[in-house]
Length: 279
Image (cartoon, rainbow, N blue to C red; front, side):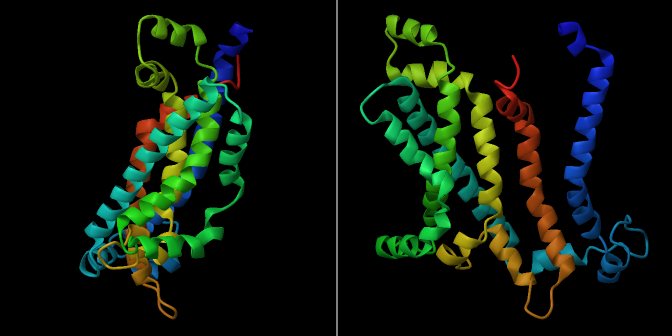
């Protein structure tokens, strides 16, 4: 069986499949990037060709820099996304550890209650969330978005991480307790390093919806000082006229953080997805 898995033909076929899927996934990104450097006419006339001397133009990027405060929008998106992911991973991992490690009355019901957040979209409670934010004075602040995204990401984080934490050796944790380690030390030093692939998976799965979300920034933080990148890009989309050069340029710059995150966590992401799939 091991020899069959190490067959060069099998490895070559796996690489070919991986390259094919990668090319299909990156093709839309490639189209957006090349068209962001074209004139408006070239975008519609030859959308799949590379820019040349006649079609090359930076008007889209110039428009993005001149209209609105793009760097402020980018900074707001980074703050909201990174802070939300930090809280999702921290609280999600702690809740998952408690559910998987300790047996208490209502353990299963608590896990099911937390899993309900995966099945029930948080947007259903938009009106109630808006009323809560108004009452607490958090409207038009980045904290409003951070709290909402943290709440929406925790159910999936707890669901995934609890399954991985159940696979951590009990002997390892008991050895730590015998050595006098506290539960916090066992959690941060022994358990968290072993579930890093799962945490990377949770981070990537939550990062993309948070970064690309338009609904809650439009409702909770629509002021100029708190606009996110996705909301700020809507200024180029009108009811009758759309500045496609600026839209494609803004999208091209918005894609970069997602691509960088994928490159950084790609190995951990693949390990987290495929862990337990094969023995």
